[in-house]
Length: 105
Image (cartoon, rainbow, N blue to C red):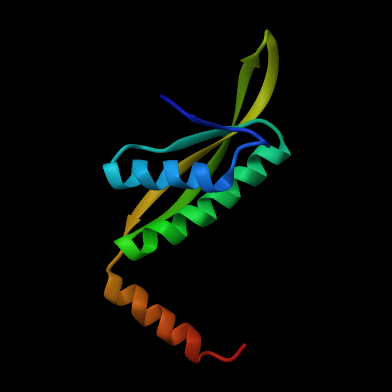
């Protein structure tokens, strides 16, 4: 299985574009992050990608897992995020936005 490797220096917008493109092409998306900064960038990318995808009828979520990996001969713990794709009806998404706007918080 191939992973999008996200680092603390990755651009969330660039990663989001890769996620959205893969989802639209029907390619499974999995990310691998080592360190808190990398996880932060990956989660921001997920949020941005959702904004790209929802108007096209797709929504995404992710499932995190831990994985022990080797980097330069050293064992490290990575967090892997499997991206789950949900098809949505644009009419129901618009209805949700209207009902959310009508709610008082």
